[in-house]
Image 1 (cartoon, rainbow, N blue to C red):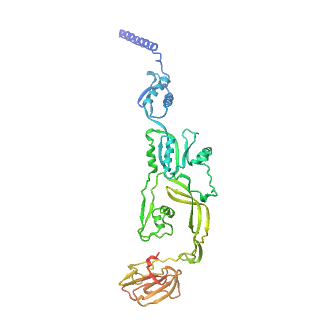
Image 2: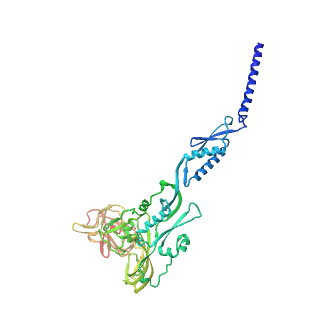
Length: 509
């Protein structure tokens, strides 16, 4: 037992001695091997799935990544777009050592270089009310705007000028369209003008009436924003495609065929237009034009993405009318009008700035005029009182017979089929001029109304009013029945205008 014990001791001592010798040898052969610092770790760094090294501090890898990206972008003459994602895996410091900063940076640089997605180049984005067009140079932007105005500047009298803001790398750019003559004579003033707008004199010269018609200014209707930027080359549009996009007409011209009952204002409202815009699209028409069934009215005009506004100064002679003068009569209804003076047209020579949008006249500003014959205004007396309304005289029943010819003669009202004893109401306020028996009408009520109309209620079974009595709208005047020349219980109702019976349905509210 002891021998075994001594033997065991020898083995234990031999094991310990061997372990110590091994550790000493490892410490000499591998200087980095030793007892690790407390809480010290190493991180394996991967970029886009590729191992690029190790580090003790994640921030060291981030600094190396930034340095590598900066170097790569500096090496390129154009802007580059790179996909890069660093991933860290923690491991025990005892089995490795961190890479130095230069090694880590170089490794990251190589992976980034292989991960370049696309190269970006300098470009110019033109935003036209939300429509964006990207062109390769400022010159192409100028050519695009020139192409848009070319149709309306046939003599090439105006030039498009871009104004750069050099205060920032990605500068905003404004434009102006300036007459070539002004640009040649006042280059310094034009370049220094606020927002690129040259100061152009607006005064009318003394010999303006003999001066030939000419273009005063050209501009675009839409808001245009031009920005310098960097984009992938695939995002840049060819100049010819951009020109086609902004100059093509985007909506087909539409016409409307006039039908019975149409008015110019009604047609304009139907298509969401003002009367002024409808008339501008139909220069052969005016507010007083009588339109006939079958006439064709333009209701839409094809428009390009970039609309051109041209202002022309013109001199011409014309007959003109003064605005109608209205005299208000507070004792008459608004349906009343009476011409007191027909008036007469005048004649004048005019100098005016006339504005056209895509060739269609949209505004006129008279600068000067010489009247050769004075105009006299038309004077019209009009009423101001709101005319009375007319309501259905019974709340029950249905129309059994309309206004119009039947059995060879005019049926001068409408019949409401209803049970005997149904309440009959005054269609409008007024006073009673007849209440009693009236031959084939049976028991009848006739009411005079303030606007000159009359209403008749026939075939009544009972009367609740008498002659000379004032009555309010909706007040019960009697009960329906079957008296007089009647084929069954009903109310016969008439509206009389100027002594003639008219269709009540045209007046009932």
